[in-house]
Amino acid sequence: MFVATIYVTLKPKVNDPQGQTILSTLQNMGFVSAISVRTGKQIEIQLNSTDHTAAQSEVQSMCNNLLANPIIEEFHFTLTEKT
Amino acid sequence: MFVATIYVTLKPKVNDPQGQTILSTLQNMGFVSAISVRTGKQIEIQLNSTDHTAAQSEVQSMCNNLLANPIIEEFHFTLTEKT
Image (cartoon, rainbow over all chains, first blue to last red; front, side, top):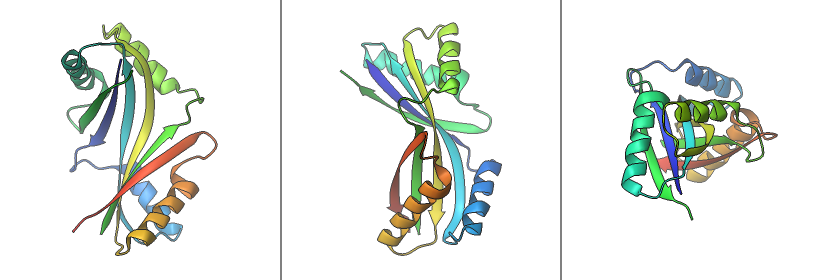
């Protein structure tokens, strides 16, 4: 079995209203050292698969086709075997 | 300057409807090896701070007071200096 941990983030030039809201809330709470906030998603998928290369290409395909929007988002993932 | 990357996930026993929806969609798309999906948030914060210990305790406090809901979520973070 493999566990893929996928991180999907907005591309650097894409506006992040959620991050901006968090930033202004942090500053209002007194965390004045915070100067920038960017948000993203973490998706952990357990795969009932035995082959690392096959699992890797499957996760890549999941990201391209469902989990990330290639127009505004980018992603990377780690894949670890779990026994 | 420091960059904190915070990962907020639901506690293992908490239901994850978003993850369940992703799982059934993946399976409908033919990714039958996917057996479990859990979702979480990634929050990257740039801190205009010079002291590692102070930055660390500040991020801990941000998580406890705003970024994570301690009843249903858990978090961990990494803190790296950026020059």
